[in-house]
Length: 217
Image 1 (cartoon, rainbow, N blue to C red):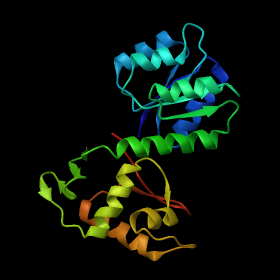
Image 2 (image 1 turned 30 degrees about the horizontal axis):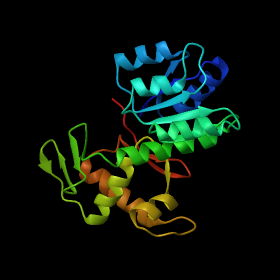
Image 3 (image 1 turned 135 degrees about the vertical axis):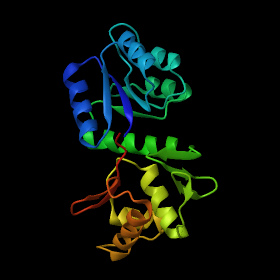
Image 4 (image 1 turned 90 degrees about the horizontal axis):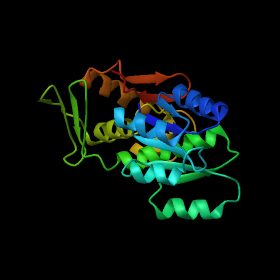
């Protein structure tokens, strides 16, 4: 689950973005002015910011500069090429132009989170510790014996946590194989992971699609 700051002064758009982020498992922190965004970020860190460039009290670039270090997707007006250039020059991770489809925004959010989370060296939750550099896994300090394929599948799930991954995508990313249709290979490896890790509550089945590693308290 990612904490995502949504900075958009149009309430209807802000609410729609927040609702869609919530539907895929993220937590949206809504702000309508630059001042509100800075106040919200000061209370608790966020994993990503979706920032509208045009704001009533300031501009999105100013807010980004004050919160630099946090990944950001800028929202720009149609045809404002200078805003896109300025955003990338200041280190933005992506931009999207109004009007946009929510599906496109969610895909961009997923892509940015995936890129930024790849820089992690460890992932810890519920006693589970995945060391991405050593490629080792422990549970409550006890080493878990995983095959390399099981480890690669777990790493793919963890780095895309809270995102529903189809069997096709898991095969493509964890096995480096492109295929069409269903595969029992993924299902068998998922069952092995659940048993070895004791995490049936986190490695969720997504009906008629695939699986999701759920990051919940």
